[in-house]
Image 1 (cartoon, rainbow, N blue to C red):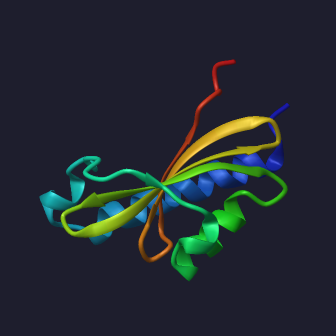
Image 2 (tube, one colour; image 1 turned 90 degrees about the vertical axis):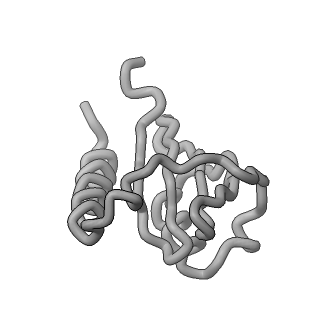
Image 3 (cartoon, rainbow, N blue to C red; image 1 turned 180 degrees about the vertical axis):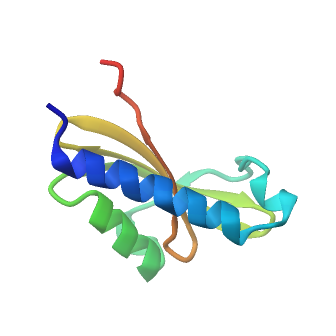
Length: 108
């Protein structure tokens, strides 16, 4: 049985992705993020909005790593975490917007 929190997180991730795509009529916004400078950092060194999003996603879970990625002059945060025994990879924008959430072990 799928845990209810997983369903809610997946739904929120889909809604967030739809909102981001609609908000951007600019094709450049759809360019994949290229890693220019990936650095691991602790949660307390992330901006407050990013910290809030990560804490919300990792509630009752564990943050495995946070890396920064630069794309077109903006910083994005790639977060790996484990919640309820499932591994997730997420991309969070500098303003705390959850852009992507992927369940790493969905097929297992």
